[in-house]
Image 1: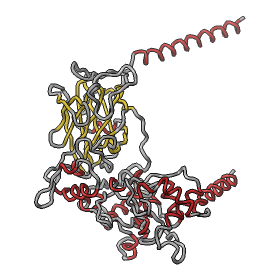
Image 2: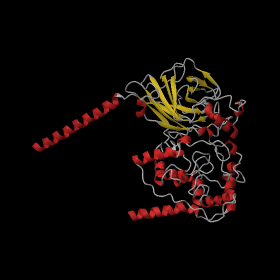
Image 3: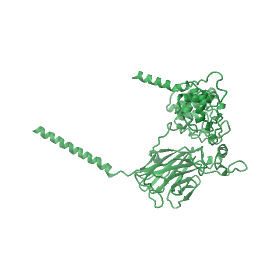
Length: 515
């Protein structure tokens, strides 16, 4: 059995290695490139395609042969296997998707064509992967040493003390072209550029990300700042900061019934025992002004009810507590770097600072009434014909309710009883909202019925406001019903019947024995 498994693993390893070794035809690769790559990277590979100016970070300029995700040293060319990895898996945290549906020959051909854009390929020996050494292993001691290495290498200056990209240097970061670039959120390892495993993280730390502020730790290692083992331990520490797999999308927020009092706010310890549901958010790119480089990429939602009131806790990562003048530089750079429809509405003062600093904001969206079928309002805040019911929050005005007839058409519902508050710490917002289950003027929640819900978020420091938002599609919220008496009585009756039936059988057997 072990031999059979070893053969299977060997065949699999050979199969995975094939794409880097197949014959490469640059002429055939041009057809693949023109079809799938040119719109972003440009016809000549200069990173200037028709969609490039709306992207952050910008698409790769292949003529410079500057690659972030490599197994080679800082400043060196990638191996063909590195390029296969990026093409197949994409670059999480950027607009570069994976192309796993390309055949091996198509992948090899497009790699040959991409390399033809730069004179640096084909000179000297083929690039060779570094020797990354042996992982000494994880555990509490390794995590403690990794945390010390995180400080020794000044990782918190960009990534923040908890890894959410809110360090003191974060508002000033630029790539080699002078364009703004976000510090990675290390607590969302599933979105890390180059992979989320300990080995992937170790490789990125050791080689750096060329063209970004992320340096290669091998220089610090050679200088005696950290040891090779401490670099591995740092990788274990970073991997421990958050989930390494994309959270499962369950589509329904299950709002459990509380045994006692509902949590009083978002910091209540009772939330620790409440299941959290993750919903991805993406940039609103349907209506002008669009948002191709959103900050908020997801929200965690928890809920409880007591039959009278419903409470929700919503948490999302945002490195800036907007409005914040410390992020003025970032806001101005971002406005200048992107084709931001409507950004010219934010003027600059004589010192070049924005005259408008938008607030952070969030909305929870429902239909006004529970739909009888699967028909729901337009997911972008409803329409004039079919409006939506909104719980709105922003960092300046707090929580309120509104009727939405589109993303820039709201009517405040001043008598609505929704209340709440929010707090920001270490790059994360926590929003708490509470409302009675029943309402005469808006949505009334019903136990056991799935009710459509959607979410939107705005990062003010990235000039997000109005239609420039992060949005979700429709999902559902479900208030769990109280335990029914039948849940308890039915098993009890079944138990009694089973016992009675057993007694009958025993007595019959005893009667036969006497006869």
